[in-house]
Length: 440
Image (cartoon, rainbow, N blue to C red; front, top):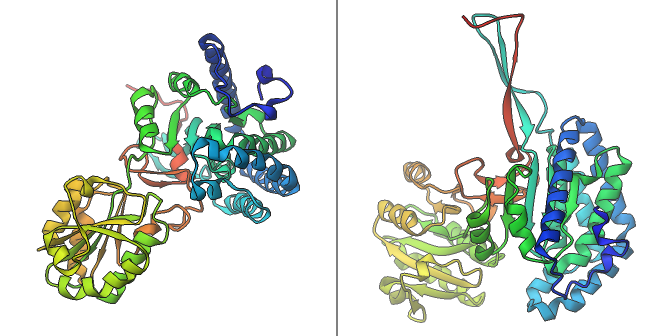
């Protein structure tokens, strides 16, 4: 790490403003980014074996540092109420022995994933004898901004290094002591495994201006990935001078079709909405075909009430659920991240698709139907990063979709879409081999 912070870097007072002069902040962010750029060049020459050795060493290092990690995490937990964190947020911040074991196991799981840089994507021989190959390459330097969950520090580092990228981590101020302690293990084990120490760097100032300084460094940073609230993502998108992989909202829909198995539909809706209502792939809107509304709503209503879900529906929804609030236009455009569900009755599959096209954030939508034609029409017409058939919206997740892990979910169409795992942290280049050919 840069010696700018001195020997007691873990003792930074995270509750202070930690503000530096702009000249000093510019110097610091530029130095970190240059170190990352140099590390990315070195990583490009490493083997999968070396990168996997580091993942196992880091996992063992985290287990060995359990007591230290819990001690540093306690400092963050003590300060958490002062940052306005509620009980759920404090629980996400908390590190326990079991969670540290899980954190270490997650790194070892990444080590078992296929090398995204291995082999060729394709190869062809041109009529003039040129051998033209496409090979995967790392993106280079990733600037990753994320919420106050210490486990993300290790997860993001693991994915980036495994895919040959250097990463600059900017976690939330609420988790700074925890992140610093985790990062120390990661960087120490990098060096011990012969990998560049600066392949994983943690931004050690809580000054919000540091983010803006990093976002100016398009010649040193290849991509920024913000993972947090809408305000953060809008700011990053507005200020970034390099590409950004992001999603703004998770306004996800469950559509119960005329040909739905209603028991299946009830189970899918409850899971999509209630399993973890505060995450981006939780359902926010229910659409029900008019031909099944009289059977489906009485079936699923008691389960929603039992789980404390507040429903905001149109007039036809309220005929069956009179306790539902009347939905406004804004309700259908809102990501609640809570036990609140907007609902509407539609008269056709086409109307459901039109509603989704109007209000969706293009994150995740699901259709519940036994009609394969309806399923094909839905998956073809709905333009979201993941479209489900007879499955919960909660499956739009890197681990659940077989990526092993993810650094985020993208609702963009370039360069990656949906959960972003190892492959999405790579690009490709052409390698052309000749025997002296010249162009006439």
